[in-house]
Length: 301
Image (cartoon, rainbow, N blue to C red):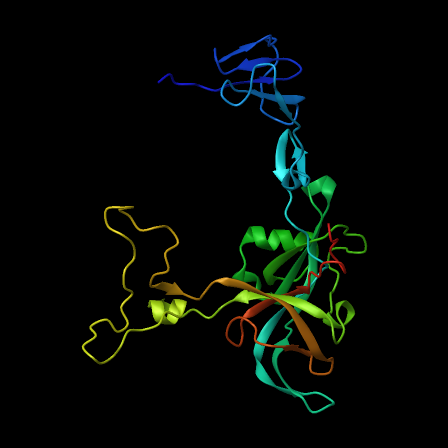
């Protein structure tokens, strides 16, 4: 039986590549060959798929993931997604029950604010390659920070702050260093927010607690109670697949809870009540930003 080896060729404006001889032809010595979007057409020909006279042409289109790629210094840098708006940082205080006007009881988390939420740096497209507002939170003593950290804050005439967060925006107009941000000016009751924080660390846990596995029978002669069980076949594939749910460290990771409703803002106490549970223990640092809602503050396309 004769073996058939498919062949293909790539043609661009300055070169031609053929799989048969694996050589590049008609390339100037001063130019370089790169596989990029410069290809005008991609021609595929195969002896067992079609005759030499029948050639299918495939048009190369720019993927959606490359539409946000910007060239900086000759390198393609993929831009990250922007936030729906500038936010603030807060401290988790605890949970309580909130009664609405119609008598419905809603579990809420109380978030307080320490001294801070000051703009420490405004990054622009021309200076840093992207638009962002850097916000500092929680005042500390000078000796708690390193000299580079102190120099960064002193440059903007800002007090020593422990935490720094960035909010990537489409435009940074209206923001300036040492500007004070207040929750009441950015949000109002009924708005939806995205809250990020570090979850409670629970240490090394088994499969039942970590992945909600079921346990075996405790009676009738069963010898498998809380054990994990089989983790894969023997000869084939002969190894454990990556991502297998097994015992391990649980919690202590960064988590974002999206689209939580602001139930009440108390300006006198300086706290805000957010519906639902938030990550971490009381005293945990939280990042509050406007919720990303498609069609409202994020385009549908």
